[in-house]
Amino acid sequence: MSQEYIFEYQGTKQMFFDSLKKYPNNNDTFFYFDNYIVKLLENEIQFGVERAGHSGGYWFIPQITEYENIIEFRGEIQYIGPVVNRSKIQKIKDDIFVCLICILFLPITLLLLFGYWIYNIINNRKKTKIKTTEDRLFDLLENHLGCTRKQSTNT
Image (cartoon, rainbow, N blue to C red):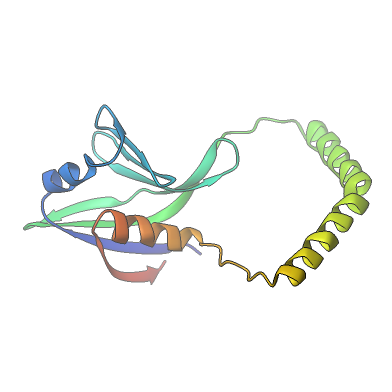
């Protein structure tokens, strides 16, 4: 089940584009800051929220509705990644190889995890909360781009 997110920006589309210009960009169409990406295309804006793997990631690609001095962004978070074209036999070979590597390195991994656990106990370290994809979306649109969250609905 995916979730729809709705944000409002107080201002016109041009004011939103002008507010983006304070961030590092490439030809005013590709903005990269604080591990976020904002990509401007002809009729849409794509917000890169979180990386996932080598060349994939989670993107918020909203429908944009412009009212009187208000822009509404309405959409869902989508995973966009590379297309993998492997045969069934190649997938089975890869899975067997991964299993063998895991079995081989399992004792070393367990030993390192035990050492890390002891290290944290000695130094009394607290766990830091990891941001979810949704938290990162809220951070980008509310804290960096000045939008306000309207509501969330399940679809």
